[in-house]
Length: 156
Image (cartoon, rainbow, N blue to C red; front, side, top):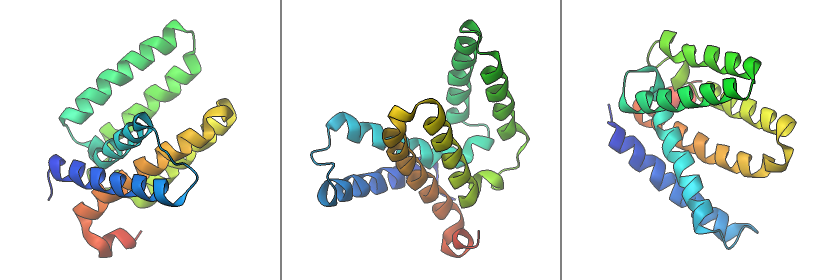
């Protein structure tokens, strides 16, 4: 199985290709370097996301970020959101490796939930978040494809 460097490289190559396509064939030209970097980071995160259910450096870093977010939510007295996020964060601990997090449908489901939540709570950011999610999904799909191959990838 490919290592994290291979997954990152695949995510970066696909992100670069998609940035090129968006710059060439849409009205998004010129794309700011900061926007390209944002999209690249989303693709790189997506390229590592399916392995969130195993003990790894990325899982430890994400857990640290999660703790900061949870503390911030508690300070802001957003207890319901903190509870929901805490419960969701337990899911990778109980999931078996290469099951749900390696499912293209699950990746699309997660991206759809984020898009719906953005449309409800932060509609002004919807276009930006949808583009970020596009890069996240491309990165995650590259990971799944590298791990499982085309036949198992298509067999959703």
